[in-house]
Length: 432
Image (cartoon, rainbow, N blue to C red; front, side, top):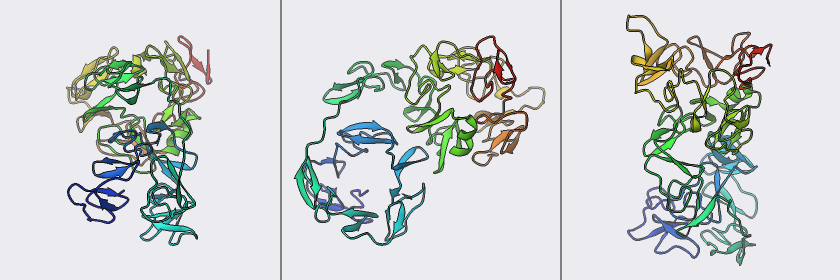
């Protein structure tokens, strides 16, 4: 993508007051395009400026008629938490496969030549016969409302799209009243700073999410803030349960409970935002258990804590002893009470819970601090009794980053995340 300081080539800067259009400096943008910070762009289709300058779509969203639309296309591949075309120069045929200089990616293969009728432009094989940005020749852009047909710009009327029911026109722009913190529940209802808009209601203090910079994020699933702010997962890995993991090695043992839901992998058995299926969101006063929304967490030792879902208030540092009761930094939650020094004994004894870079970590089972702070297991490996392992020892079964006995565990009875009804026990993998 060209910039004002790299317009048409590296370090080719436009003059003051000029814009960069398809790699050429000029004074104005063509019809149908808008000047966004010196770059000419089409607001109806640019995911970085969707509908208005600076309006960014999500990592796996597309911009359609100025509206961000969820989901990767069937021709795309999920690389970490983003959609990438298999014909992409930087992800040609596989995530992270970059074509060489003077090559383009065509049909998921790097090539030095383009087929007849195509020209190599910025790492892509472009047809002058159908490219609206290079119609008939390099840099010839079609106006708004036109398509490039056989190298000639021709009028085109796109089909009308009906926005979802939760959208409303607020100050001339579409806003999702269910999630937009500037228009939460109604146009102009601005949530306080560091609040979330969930199902049209403002949730203060990031809810059960984590403040990273000026925003709130789920460090259990955000590949750019995985486990902690600023921890970025490598290409080919996803953030699952707060740790970067090879998707196949983590998801497969969960017996189909995990599914790719847009930008994240979700446990549809227990994720209240994807309960039973992607994007099936439970009401604010309900949680997700066994893939169904309800008021009970089922299983054993779990408490329903609003948008935080089902948690163990005996060990949760953000819901210690009760929902929403957070322990101070450097403290651990032990038996429902916050204990300083990460719960380490004061008599000189040892503890598996240690302060690692200011975060309390259980070095017995934390893959990022396995056996000691900073001792990270290879991607996809478990931490069992302070040592990295590929599988769980019999008779236990791997469920994500844990090793429960699915024959006796009421929270994983007969399979990962299959919870028994309250008061039931698990015997031979069957609740009763």
